[in-house]
Image 1 (cartoon, rainbow, N blue to C red):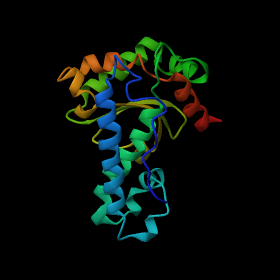
Image 2 (cartoon, helix red, strand yellow):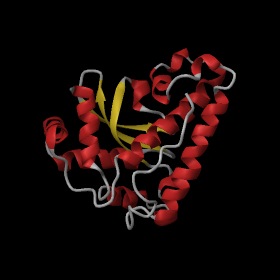
Image 3 (cartoon, rainbow, N blue to C red):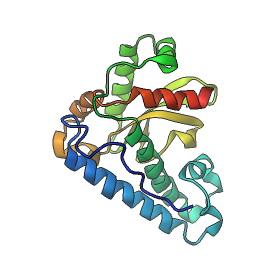
Length: 204
């Protein structure tokens, strides 16, 4: 399998004013592409791992040879995480979820606002670079977590359905050091239809 940069489902400027076009272009075409390039290089000496996916690598990191495991963790994670990230945003997004995921959010966290506060707290609490995640754990329960760097919930027995990139490259051109402002703005571009689709793909 050749790892390929997925096209965005919208133009680079489509998420303005919340996420600026220059950030989206650099983030997608430079940062995401670099993860793909680095993953490809890391696997060159191990052809037995090449006809696979980033997801399968992350699900079984202990099977990856020791000398490339860190590179695979970082770069397969970067590829998988960003591929999900692009899909769960859209122009004129935001609002509140509907459907099964909305019901489960209320059941698990009390109210949507309670969930949003918890998610924001996790996103703000990441020290340095990382992500905040809404995932489904091995028991089918929704969980909110924060993970460092490009670690994926897949490597922690959970399947992500929504994630927020809080690496500085995701927001610094527009928001500088004001990560909380970026987090607040991001809720205006969430594609809840895709989050619902991701959730249904796990539970149905």
